[in-house]
Image (cartoon, rainbow, N blue to C red; front, side, top):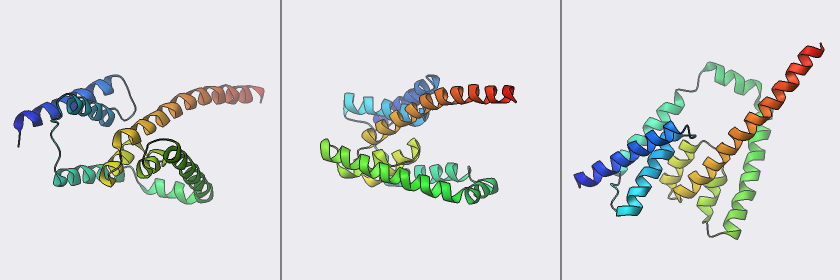
Length: 173
Protein backbone atom coordinates (compact mmCIF):
# COMPACT_ATOMS: atom_id res chain seq x y z
CA UNK A 1 0.00 0.00 0.00
CA UNK A 2 1.31 3.42 -1.00
CA UNK A 3 0.53 5.74 1.92
CA UNK A 4 1.37 8.86 -0.11
CA UNK A 5 -1.11 7.87 -2.81
CA UNK A 6 -3.76 7.12 -0.18
CA UNK A 7 -3.28 10.49 1.53
CA UNK A 8 -3.25 12.43 -1.75
CA UNK A 9 -6.39 10.67 -2.99
CA UNK A 10 -8.22 11.14 0.33
CA UNK A 11 -7.24 14.84 0.42
CA UNK A 12 -8.45 15.33 -3.16
CA UNK A 13 -11.76 13.62 -2.36
CA UNK A 14 -12.33 15.70 0.78
CA UNK A 15 -11.30 18.97 -0.90
CA UNK A 16 -13.51 18.27 -3.92
CA UNK A 17 -16.46 17.36 -1.69
CA UNK A 18 -15.96 20.51 0.39
CA UNK A 19 -15.77 22.81 -2.64
CA UNK A 20 -18.83 21.22 -4.26
CA UNK A 21 -20.74 21.56 -0.97
CA UNK A 22 -19.80 25.24 -0.67
CA UNK A 23 -21.00 25.74 -4.27
CA UNK A 24 -24.32 24.03 -3.37
CA UNK A 25 -24.04 21.54 -6.25
CA UNK A 26 -26.49 18.62 -6.39
CA UNK A 27 -25.06 15.52 -4.67
CA UNK A 28 -22.11 17.72 -3.74
CA UNK A 29 -20.05 15.27 -1.64
CA UNK A 30 -20.31 12.55 -4.27
CA UNK A 31 -19.62 14.75 -7.28
CA UNK A 32 -16.95 16.85 -5.62
CA UNK A 33 -15.05 13.81 -4.39
CA UNK A 34 -15.33 12.23 -7.84
CA UNK A 35 -13.93 15.33 -9.54
CA UNK A 36 -11.16 15.72 -6.95
CA UNK A 37 -10.03 12.12 -7.33
CA UNK A 38 -10.36 12.33 -11.12
CA UNK A 39 -8.03 15.35 -11.15
CA UNK A 40 -5.46 13.40 -9.11
CA UNK A 41 -5.85 10.36 -11.34
CA UNK A 42 -5.48 12.40 -14.55
CA UNK A 43 -2.56 14.44 -13.21
CA UNK A 44 -0.61 11.62 -11.58
CA UNK A 45 -2.18 8.32 -12.72
CA UNK A 46 -1.74 7.17 -9.14
CA UNK A 47 -5.05 7.66 -7.36
CA UNK A 48 -5.40 5.09 -4.59
CA UNK A 49 -7.91 2.38 -5.58
CA UNK A 50 -10.49 1.17 -3.09
CA UNK A 51 -10.35 -2.60 -2.66
CA UNK A 52 -13.49 -4.70 -3.35
CA UNK A 53 -14.14 -5.11 0.38
CA UNK A 54 -14.01 -1.33 0.82
CA UNK A 55 -16.43 -0.80 -2.06
CA UNK A 56 -18.79 -3.33 -0.48
CA UNK A 57 -18.74 -1.35 2.77
CA UNK A 58 -19.46 1.89 0.88
CA UNK A 59 -22.44 0.26 -0.88
CA UNK A 60 -23.74 -1.08 2.44
CA UNK A 61 -23.56 2.43 3.91
CA UNK A 62 -25.41 3.85 0.90
CA UNK A 63 -28.11 1.21 1.31
CA UNK A 64 -28.35 2.07 4.98
CA UNK A 65 -28.68 5.78 4.18
CA UNK A 66 -31.38 5.14 1.56
CA UNK A 67 -33.24 2.67 3.77
CA UNK A 68 -33.48 5.28 6.51
CA UNK A 69 -35.65 7.42 4.23
CA UNK A 70 -38.41 4.77 4.04
CA UNK A 71 -41.13 4.77 6.70
CA UNK A 72 -44.79 3.76 7.13
CA UNK A 73 -45.98 7.06 5.61
CA UNK A 74 -43.89 6.35 2.51
CA UNK A 75 -45.60 2.99 2.08
CA UNK A 76 -49.05 4.56 2.51
CA UNK A 77 -48.30 7.21 -0.11
CA UNK A 78 -47.05 4.52 -2.51
CA UNK A 79 -50.19 2.43 -1.97
CA UNK A 80 -52.53 5.41 -2.43
CA UNK A 81 -50.88 6.51 -5.68
CA UNK A 82 -49.97 3.10 -7.12
CA UNK A 83 -51.55 3.46 -10.59
CA UNK A 84 -50.18 6.93 -11.42
CA UNK A 85 -46.78 5.90 -10.06
CA UNK A 86 -46.78 2.73 -12.19
CA UNK A 87 -47.69 4.72 -15.31
CA UNK A 88 -44.97 7.27 -14.54
CA UNK A 89 -42.35 4.54 -14.01
CA UNK A 90 -43.26 2.85 -17.30
CA UNK A 91 -43.06 6.21 -19.12
CA UNK A 92 -39.65 6.96 -17.57
CA UNK A 93 -38.37 3.51 -18.52
CA UNK A 94 -39.59 3.73 -22.11
CA UNK A 95 -38.14 7.23 -22.51
CA UNK A 96 -34.87 6.06 -20.92
CA UNK A 97 -34.61 3.08 -23.27
CA UNK A 98 -35.20 5.26 -26.33
CA UNK A 99 -32.67 7.85 -25.10
CA UNK A 100 -30.15 5.09 -24.31
CA UNK A 101 -30.56 3.61 -27.76
CA UNK A 102 -29.97 7.05 -29.33
CA UNK A 103 -26.84 7.62 -27.22
CA UNK A 104 -25.50 4.17 -28.06
CA UNK A 105 -26.40 4.36 -31.75
CA UNK A 106 -25.14 7.86 -32.53
CA UNK A 107 -22.17 8.28 -30.15
CA UNK A 108 -19.21 6.22 -28.99
CA UNK A 109 -20.91 5.52 -25.63
CA UNK A 110 -21.26 1.81 -24.89
CA UNK A 111 -24.71 0.32 -24.34
CA UNK A 112 -24.33 -0.28 -20.57
CA UNK A 113 -23.19 3.28 -19.94
CA UNK A 114 -25.98 4.65 -22.16
CA UNK A 115 -28.61 2.61 -20.31
CA UNK A 116 -27.40 3.68 -16.87
CA UNK A 117 -26.96 7.32 -17.93
CA UNK A 118 -30.57 7.54 -19.08
CA UNK A 119 -32.16 5.38 -16.38
CA UNK A 120 -34.25 7.23 -13.81
CA UNK A 121 -32.48 7.33 -10.50
CA UNK A 122 -30.56 9.45 -8.05
CA UNK A 123 -27.02 10.55 -8.71
CA UNK A 124 -25.50 8.62 -5.81
CA UNK A 125 -27.43 5.45 -6.54
CA UNK A 126 -26.71 5.47 -10.27
CA UNK A 127 -23.06 6.30 -9.64
CA UNK A 128 -22.66 3.40 -7.23
CA UNK A 129 -24.57 1.02 -9.49
CA UNK A 130 -22.54 2.15 -12.53
CA UNK A 131 -19.27 1.57 -10.72
CA UNK A 132 -20.35 -1.90 -9.65
CA UNK A 133 -21.61 -2.75 -13.15
CA UNK A 134 -18.45 -1.59 -14.91
CA UNK A 135 -20.01 1.32 -16.80
CA UNK A 136 -18.25 4.60 -17.58
CA UNK A 137 -19.08 6.33 -14.27
CA UNK A 138 -18.08 9.90 -15.27
CA UNK A 139 -20.41 9.75 -18.30
CA UNK A 140 -23.28 8.34 -16.23
CA UNK A 141 -22.85 10.94 -13.50
CA UNK A 142 -22.47 13.82 -15.98
CA UNK A 143 -25.80 12.97 -17.60
CA UNK A 144 -27.48 12.67 -14.19
CA UNK A 145 -26.00 15.94 -12.92
CA UNK A 146 -27.26 17.72 -16.04
CA UNK A 147 -30.68 16.10 -15.56
CA UNK A 148 -30.92 17.01 -11.87
CA UNK A 149 -29.67 20.56 -12.47
CA UNK A 150 -32.19 21.03 -15.28
CA UNK A 151 -34.99 19.69 -13.09
CA UNK A 152 -34.04 22.04 -10.24
CA UNK A 153 -34.00 25.06 -12.56
CA UNK A 154 -37.19 24.13 -14.40
CA UNK A 155 -39.05 23.17 -11.24
CA UNK A 156 -38.07 26.46 -9.59
CA UNK A 157 -39.56 28.36 -12.52
CA UNK A 158 -42.61 26.06 -12.61
CA UNK A 159 -43.24 26.42 -8.89
CA UNK A 160 -43.02 30.19 -9.14
CA UNK A 161 -45.54 30.16 -11.98
CA UNK A 162 -47.81 27.72 -10.18
CA UNK A 163 -47.46 29.72 -6.97
CA UNK A 164 -48.64 32.83 -8.79
CA UNK A 165 -51.58 30.90 -10.23
CA UNK A 166 -52.51 29.50 -6.81
CA UNK A 167 -52.38 32.98 -5.29
CA UNK A 168 -54.62 34.37 -8.09
CA UNK A 169 -57.10 31.50 -7.62
CA UNK A 170 -57.19 32.07 -3.85
CA UNK A 171 -57.75 35.82 -4.29
CA UNK A 172 -60.51 35.26 -6.85
CA UNK A 173 -62.53 33.18 -4.36
